[in-house]
Image (cartoon, rainbow, N blue to C red):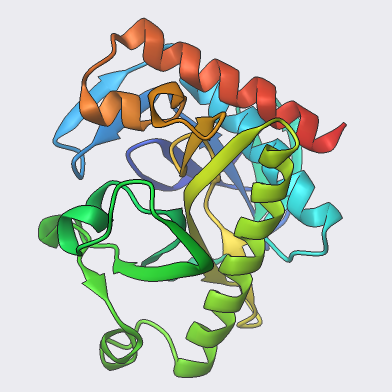
Length: 243
């Protein structure tokens, strides 16, 4: 598809200007996979298309459930048309089960269930390894206003519940989920970025040893073929979200 100048590029995506609408942009998914704030980096052929399709399916699910996002359409494999936004440099993490960095930081047991969900904020800052912050930090850093942070939390928890329900229909536990937000030209908060197998932990049958997500790559316990198969399976699962 035609697209304009490159507006930005991250570790796994590139953003281009829309050729005919100044309010829109085009998101392109790369085959790169990274961990440890980019310290670990590989190219996983085919991952970009899988991330594209998973994101499309998840945003279609959210749209069906009345959640406002930057997603407009997916005109062809690898590309999304999205509303142009100014991203808020926060990673918004909702947790149903304790694992990963949480049990390293706090005295929770592996697999401990949270009801209600635990919600956390992390500042997007690779140099500082995306530190955990609270609302006061975010406000003092001029990252977001208090009322925006309240809306972000409410929306993030609702997004988790929608996706969790979709996974549960396939006997898969959504362990945790990272999403991001931005502001459109009118200042409205919208769910942004992508939501892919990089964004969550999923345990089929509720068992950690069955994980399909990017943690396989982070841990380095599986070969790249197994990592790709996990992404392929996650995309296959996401197709049922929109059937």
